[in-house]
Length: 320
Image 1 (cartoon, rainbow, N blue to C red):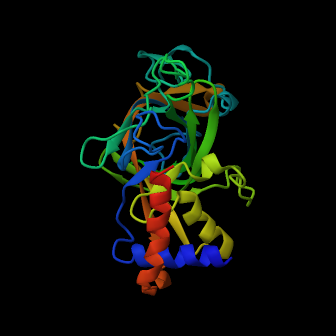
Image 2 (image 1 turned 45 degrees about the vertical axis):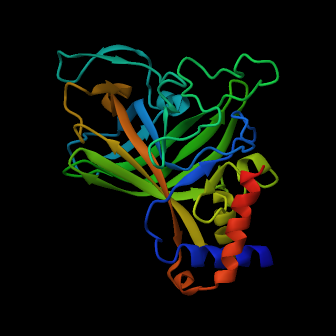
C-alpha cells in the first residue's frame, strides 16, 4: 500500500500542469533488437492504423435517432447478427456490395508507431501485413519481431448527425508470429463527432474481462509493456494505484478516426436477419493516443522528492 501511495503522489506531482494533454509513451518488448542495451522503443506520440475493415450493425433504421449500433471486428459477434461473407444487393435495390471478415493482421493492426520528433527506434516492430514473422532469419533472434493487433466491440445509438458511442472495449494484443498476448483493454465511455471525424474515448484498464479483477497480476511482460515517458511509470502502475484506492487516477485514451459519411446511405447497407439488422462495411484510418489524468485533488500534491520514483523507474527500464 505504501508503494501505491508513493506512486500516486509522484504522479500527481509530475502531471500537475499537464493533466489533460496527451503525452508520449514507450513500449517495452522485453528484448534488445538494436544492440543498444535497451528493450524499449523510442518515445511514441500515437499508434497509427490504416485500412481497418470496420463492420457496423444497425438494429433498425440508422436514419432514426436512437437506433442501436454495434461496431466490431470480432467474427463471433458478426456471426451472431447473421453476418456471412459474400456479395449482396444493397437496400437501394441496385448496388452490389461485398462483405468479408477482417483479414488479420492486415486489417486489424497498428501499422505505424508515430515517434516523438518524427523518427525513432521500434526495437523489432513490424506492421505484420502478411503475417508476423517470429525471427529476423538470424540464429538466436527468434521471437524478436513483433506487432500490435486489436479486437473491438463498441456500442452506441444513432443521432441526427451520426452515432454517439457510450460503451464497449478496444482490446490490444502483442503478436510475434507465435504468441498473441493481450496487453491492454481500452474501455469506451463516450465519443465526439465533428463532421466526418470521430473521437472515441475512455479509460485504460487491466481488467480484461470486466469482472472487477486484475487480469495482469503476476504477468510482468504485460505489466511493463506500456510506459508513460514523462513519469517513467508503467500504465499498469498508474492503473493499479487507482484500482487499489478507488480510482485515484487513470490513463485515458482517445481513438481518432474518420467515418464518411457518419450515417450510412442506402447503397452501403445490406439487410440481414429478415431485415431486423442492417450492416455496413467500410475502411477506417486513424490513431490512438494516451493521457495521464489525475483526480483533481491530486493536482495539489507537490513533493519534488517523489519525482525520483518515476525517474528511477525510467532509468531501470532504459538499462534493462
